[in-house]
Length: 134
Image (cartoon, rainbow, N blue to C red; front, side, top):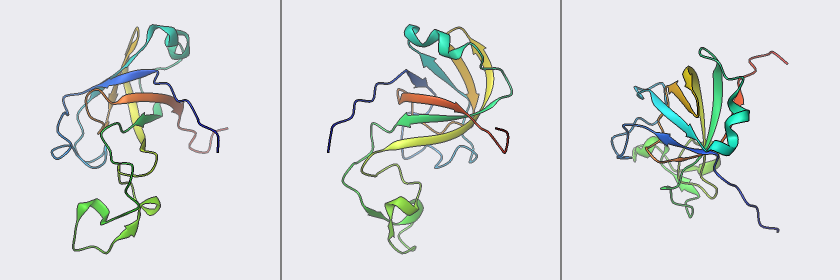
């Protein structure tokens, strides 16, 4: 298998710093946060608008990569489940997928709602939510 190179386009700036205190999903009380992009990606931001729903892909850099089964949501009363059937951050390739709403675009910074990623998390990509629109 060939290697792959993934380069972050920016980082998350968030008040969330402790994974044990962070919400498990964005709609569970996640605070607003900023996506702070590297200067090289400024042209890629030009059409983002407040009110847009986007998917943010992150690299969950503090996650374990050797986990294949988990108790969903860390609840030991639930049976172990294969990690590909869960939203666990701990997985062979810890890519985070976050549906957020753009609140503000300020140069290289994009303020978003409902992002449960920790401060400093690398941002890999941003894609529009299609919701049936092609």
